[in-house]
Figure 1 (cartoon, rainbow, N blue to C red):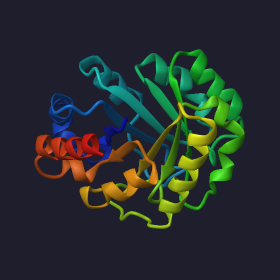
Figure 2: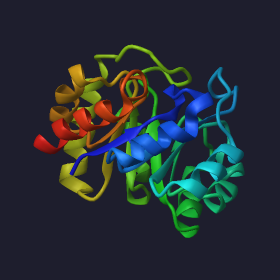
Figure 3: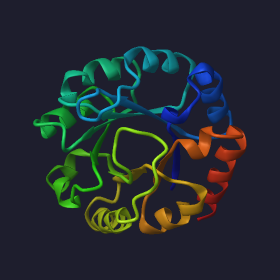
Figure 4: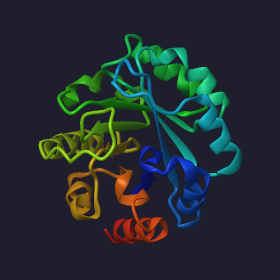
Length: 218
């Protein structure tokens, strides 16, 4: 099954509540929330208050992506405020097994992300602890970037490993995904599709439905 996960990094913050409501009403099951600390990535983005407010009004699966150094510092608070899944970066955490185990113990789903230059092999020691692997298809930290084509081979490699050994693990991609390259990514094996600009720029309802229609037909 394929899942659409609109990223609010591309939303109009003045209209954030209305736009999230449109995403939910249009049928998207997930919402992607990028937490950036200005250290692991140059940008600073959403924090705890945004997650708390969105959780109060939305039933969407809150997919929290931690682009943060030492993410273990914030796990408990994020889940308390409503994160359904928390993804940490293999490049940013020195206690990966302990952090993933803590996320599970607190009742949330675990994700482990890798940057475009990080090999798939970096996540393999932790596969028994993850519910999802996230392959970044742009450099983390900024929305609106172009898709890095070299990542397609990584998606295929990861999909092969998942199918053979970890069939319940989801494979998420994040960055530069559009309707124009969606088929390529689905064919490569991604089944959780994060996309920001392609959803929030223009007619949100139509954009969500176009993505869902295509993803359901595959």
